[in-house]
Length: 247
Image (cartoon, rainbow, N blue to C red; front, side, top):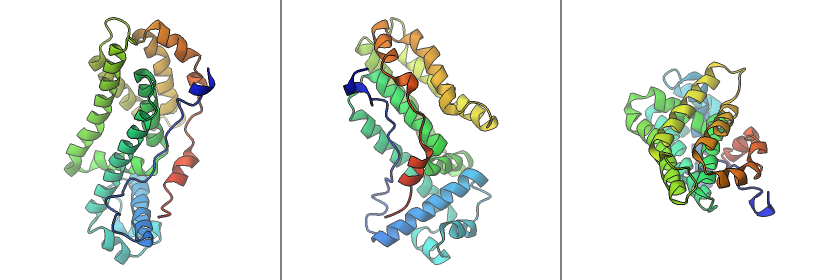
């Protein structure tokens, strides 16, 4: 591993991406809005969207009902805001990964690591995913969440094939569909078996088995010596710090 590639797999941590929604707000009002979104997301993640009340969110966020209704007209609007932040903060991360100018297979690994880390540790994403599951009015957004992930994977795999990084016969469309099904399964298993391997550990093992079946030998050789297999897992505290609604 050369010094220049030592941190290619570093995780980009989520950050607030509500710039449009909060554009006309003063610093204090923006902080209040974010505190309410965060409190709602945490409740939705642990208790479920339908069982969560606005009174609980107000209490958790340390705000008043007046403050809540200044920003959100209903629980549905608050749930919508959590989902919007979930989707927008991923767009921000995807742009930051693209800016690293990695080869397509390395970029694919970072994309999956970043998504998994968010599912494990970003409270907004955890709440947003729960809302997407439970609110029938957000079916279009749930489809977008899944389809964007699959499509990004296929694009990167197509670029890898064009660059000669895949073995002959590797199918980007089939591989991207398989990857998505695999991560969904890992996520469900990790939730059902909290004392078992984490979704991060499960997917890391999947890559060790999958990449030798699709990647060219020259790429595999560089990957094995790049330090990826010893990369640190996601730092939950970093996601908590990033979601502190300071303004």
